[in-house]
Image 1 (tube, protein in one colour):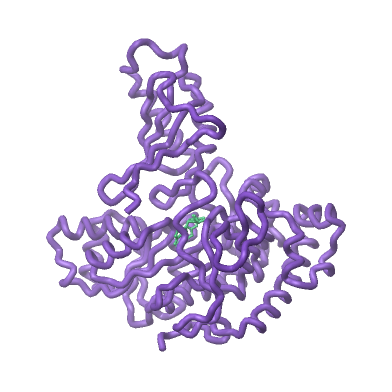
Image 2: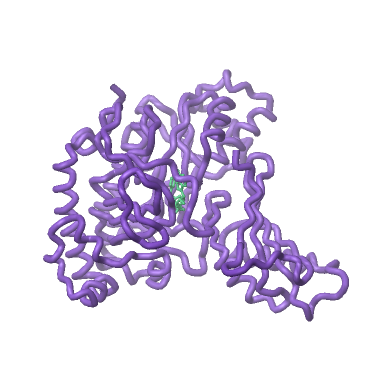
Length: 435
Ligand code: DLL
């Protein structure tokens, strides 16, 4: 049987797991009630006290926590402890205008490290591996999160971060990397750079890869496996739950095992918010069970998936979630950065030369995704030609990069050329090959 990092919890009996979840949920609600005014107000509005939560189902009486709630509380309002207890922060990728903050105590970091270590072991990584990590190290949780987990299992870690592609290839060759960890699209870009440099995958020592932080299809998995000669595993997480480490595939590859001893996961109908029966696809809603610095109750992830709590052939008993391929909102992930059209709109609003009509066009150029922002000129700034406006396009692109952290191409178009839709504007035009 394949290795399991923490059999005590990864193969726990469901009944015992639910008892543990309830105890941890009660402690979490207590902490929220005592230390986070936002949650205290919510419980008070419902006339509830922490003692009223006697079963896991009682949690459903609480309203959801949303991304907007997190943004409104930027930077410290949801932090449940004095700052002297906090040892690390990360920020959600994307927006710097009003990003969401993650805070960790020393215990939170230790848990996070362990959960990532579980994913790594599930994905066949061992202390014999030379692990090349090309997630960004910085405010984004990917690099540090995977790094800590890989060190915890005793692997030899190369924190290459977002180095240029030729350097990634050189390091792979020189250090005889056996495992790659990063974004799936970047893995393909590395494969392309490798092929362009005339490097044969057979001459490398690669064996396995763990990829995530953006949706990727089975076809993409196959392309990565064939071009890099590795077995590729999916890992999933979100900043609000601490980053990576929330779930990951095992060699059976029939869903991603959730760390259910640390997260209570619900699947709800995105339209009504009502819980759905197991197996049905809906929005994942997370409640943290062990977080000290930033406990969150019923956080709406926006990610669509379905759960299966049947034990897996690998021996793990924790539930598996189906790979995430879609979201409930119009967020797009470009080079690992989460972009919300509403944030682009905020930047555009600061330019009187353009109107509020815009569209984000996502295209696959080679193996990478590129984002173009098409925006209509304001009628009063439009003469029969839009030439001579390259300067303005660049200025807008620069401001979007400065505020959202993502590189885009801006294209000014004539007034009334972007399709108007009835109801909610269709802000994102996804031209990517859906494979
Ligand atoms: O992407 C954390 C992470 C780092 C996960 C490294 C895995 C590996 P955020 O930047 O907050 O955090 O983005 C979270 O990315 O809600 C999903 O929409 C998407 N996402 C993450 N992993 C996957 C995946 C990190 N394996 C958002 N498949 C999530 C599909 C994913 N989507």
